Image (cartoon, rainbow, N blue to C red; front, side, top):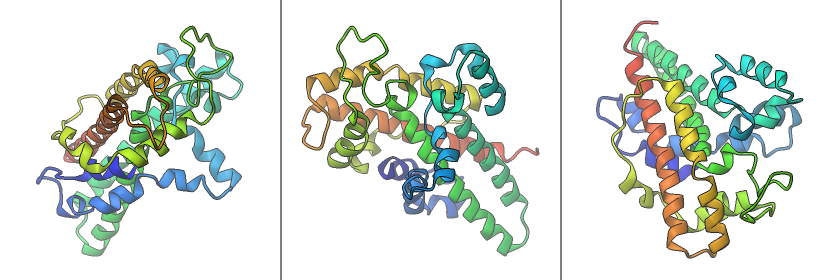
Amino acid sequence: HESAGRAAATDLPAEMPAFFREATEQLAYLNPEPDRWRGDGFRELNEAKRYDHYIDFELVPDSVRAAPDRFQYLIALQKLGLENPAREAGLLPFRIVELYQSLVVEWRLWRAAEDPARRQWIEQRIINDAGILGHYVTDGANPHHTTVHHDGWRADWPNPRNFTMERGFHSRFESQFVEARIRTADLLPHVRAPRRLENVRDDVLAYLLESHSHLERLYELDQVERFGRETQGAEHRDFAVARLAAGANMLRDLWWTAWLASENPR
C-alpha cells in the first residue's frame, strides 16, 4: 500500500497546490490506514469498515451495479436473496466514489477559504481523505478484492482448473510477496501523467472490472510458482508491478479529477 501511494504522489502536475504535491510521504503513510483501523479488535469499528475493501462481482449483476448509492445497492442485493449483502458482496466502488466526492467538496472549500488558518485545516482534511482514498483504490488493483475467490478458490464453486483453495493465498500475494519483491522504484516507470476522468463512477467500476479480469492469471501464476517471500518468477513480479501501477495511476486520476472538478461551483 505505501509503495503504491508513494508512486501515485510522485511528480504530480505543477498545477496542483504545493501543499499537496509536497505531501508524498504523508499520502504514502495514510494509504494503509483503513487496515490499521481493523487491527485492534474493536468489533464496532471493524464491522463498520470491513466491507468497504472489496466487491464480489460474481454476486453483483449489472442491474445492481447501477444502483445510485450504497443503500439502494444493498436493498437490491437483498431482494436477490443475499441475507447480508454488505458482507457477501462488498461495497468497494461506493467507498471510492464517496471519498472522491469528499475531495471535490474539500477542494472547493479550500479555493474559497480566505482565512489562512482555516485554509490550513482544510489542507489537512484534503491530505487525509486523499490518502485514505488511496487505500481502497490500491485494494481494487488486486484481483482478490473483486471476487468471491478472495483467499483461495471457494470450495462451493466450480474449479475445473484446480486452482488452489488454500487459505492464506491473499496474504501470500498481497503482503508477503509484494513486501519482499516490489519497491516504489519498480512502479515509477509505469506511472503516467494523470488524466481527467469523464465519468468517475463509470470509470471506477471499469477499473475494478478490469482488475477482476486478471483473476485467473493470478491463480495460474500461483500454480506455476507459489507466491510468497521467496518467489523468484519474473512473470510473478511483472504481474504485481502492473497491478500496483494500475492502482497508482487510477489514484492519480482521481486526485487530479477532484482538483479540476472543484473549479466549478456546486
